[in-house]
Structures are given as C-alpha cells and as structure tokens.
Amino acid sequence: MQHYFDNAATSFPKPDVVLDAIAQYHQGCGASPGRGAYSQAVNATETLDRCRELLCTLVNAPSPKHCIFTLNCTDALNLAIRGVASYHEEENNEAHIITTAMDHNSVFRPLSALAPNVAHTIIKADSKTGLVSPAAIREAIRPSTRLIAIAHGSNVTGTVQDIAAISNNCGNIPLLVDAAQTIGHLPIDMQEMGIDLLAFPGHKGLLGPLGTGGLIMKPGMESILHPLRTGGTGSQSDKPIQPTTLPDKYEPGSHNMLGISGLLASVQWILDNSVDALHKKERELCEQFINELALVEGVRIVGPPTTANRCGVFSLSFDACPHGIAKQLEQDFGICARSGLHCAPHAHETMGTDVHGGTLRISFGPFHSNSDIAHLTQAISNCTQRVFV
Image (cartoon, rainbow, N blue to C red; front, side):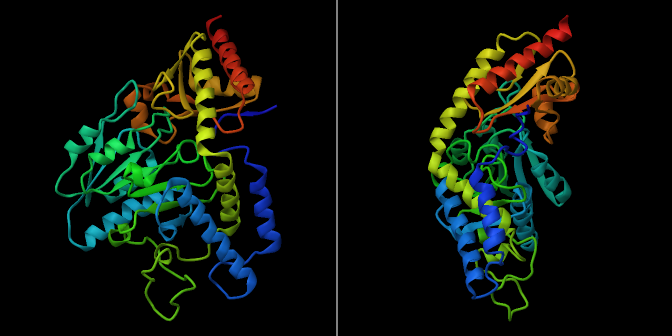
C-alpha cells in the first residue's frame, strides 16, 4: 500500500468531485469559453467565470475579473515579475526587485534571466526558523524598487511568513505573494493582509488538476503589469492589438477548461469543508508528527520546531543520506516522499542543509489521518535504527 506524503509537489488524492467535474465537462460541454453564443460555449464561459468568483471568495479578493488564469504558479510568478519589469523598462525606469532566501526557483530564475537590466536583493532569513525580518525588507527598499516578492510558505521548511507585517513595511511598493504552499491549507485574506499580487497553483492545496494556476491582482495593478503573451481572446477581434480589458489582457488563447472545471469543483469542496477546519486538522497532524518524531533518534526537523509559523511541510535532516532514506521508506513502507534541494537552493543554504544534498521532505494533505502519521514516524524510526545498528 502506498502512503503519499508529497503534497508540496502536487496533492494526491483529489476529492472525487474533481474527476467527476472533468468527466462531466469532457462529455457534456467541451466548448471553449468566449468563442460563441451557442449554449455549450455559454456554459463554458459560466464555468470559467464561476471559478474566478470562488477563488476570489476563498482569498477575499475584490474583483473576479482581476483573477487571471495561467499555466501554473510558475507562470503566474513570471507574469508578475516580468510584467512589472517590462512596464518599467518601457518607461525607461530603473528596476530593482526584492525577494528572500526562502523563495523558490520560480522567482530566482526569472530574476536571473532579467539581470543585469533588473537588479535584485535577496533578504536573508533566520537559520533556525526560516523567518524573514519585515524590517530588513524595509531597509532594502531603494528609490528604484518596483516589486517585493515573498514566498508565503516555504516549500522546504514549511515556514509561514507574516505577510501582513511585511506588507506594512513595503510602503507603496507592490507586494507579490507566492501562495504555492499555503492557499487551500490556511486562511488567506488579500485585503486584510495587504497583498497586491497573489500567485497560486491549482494542483497543490487547492486540490485541482495539474496545469492550472493563476495570478489574482489588486485592482489597479494592471496599469503597471505588461502581458507576456498576446493573441486571440474572442473579444475585440477586429483590432490588431491585445484588448486592455480584464481578464482578456492576460489570457490569450483557449483555456484549459478540463483543468479549470476540476479546479472549480475542488475550490467549492474546500469552501464547503471550510479552510479554517482544514487548517485546524493540519495543525493537529503537524503537532502529532512533531511530538512523535521527537522520540526518534538520528533525525531532526529543519525549520520551525513547533506548529507556530508553519504549514504542513517538513524538511528532515538525517545522519545518513536523505536520498537513501527516501528510497528505503518507499521500498519497505510504501511511503512516497521527496529528497533533494526542492528547487529552493537558497533556502537550503540558509538552513545549512545544502552540503548534505538537501533534506527529506514530508508534506501533508487533507486526507491524511492520525494513523498515517503514526505509520510515517514508525517507518522513519525503523530506517534510522538500521543506520545506527
């Protein structure tokens, strides 16, 4: 029997309603939204619009038309980073972007590709908790700073940053939040937390299909964010330029409606089950895991040692190679977990785990139970005992 613990990469299993929705769209609709006035095209448009509405409800975003669908979270982060940089390049403005050591390569690689035309500063994080000082972000702001990008939850340590405090230190600089590890797992309120741009994947905590994601903008952000792609939208077809109306400005081409249909169903499932309730259950599982793992020799948790300032993503460091432990866990106990650097080299450098080839990452989902956690910790204990015997 397989025990899946890699929800930080993609969630599994999905709620049954997700597959049902995909099949229903495939068998009963199949049309592309905005591409006709016949009933199937109208139904497709309603599905698309409804998904935007529910996503905005989930994170308290004020305008569904500012919810832009993308290929995934990486695509959304590229749209935000490159879109802002492109706008300021056109305006002949210097551009400087601030990010942190806990961010993912989905942020670092676009920034590296933009260098040297766009400067960027990496704010260090605490080497024990992974937390970033909001004051350090404020001190790094220059007259040319155009964007501040923050990973809400680390995909390495599970560290959850205080976004509201960081936002309060941003001044008038737009704040881009990478919610890859937090949306669907814990409550997010864009307006209360001061988030200007929220990038999200559909296939992780939102429990939707791969190939879905988006960027939710605070109204007004579209004035400083150039689109990355242009093409057909089904609107203003007589004009040679991309429409400036939203969401068409950023959504050329046909949508992944099979994926979005599944995402609509999964977001509705989350709303029906309550993010607060899902978060409460995850915190209880995290507490159980921390308490049980404390009794196991030869392994330590990298990052927050308690349930404070964390989500259900854990990096484990062993006296042995993490890759060997991961292989042993699957072969002997059916546990699927990921070892390595997790596309976040600076986070591992911060925590001092890069020299060991990274860590073993365990990440929880809403269908895990107390018995799953007990099986996991017992399996880890058995693996570490073999190392010492």
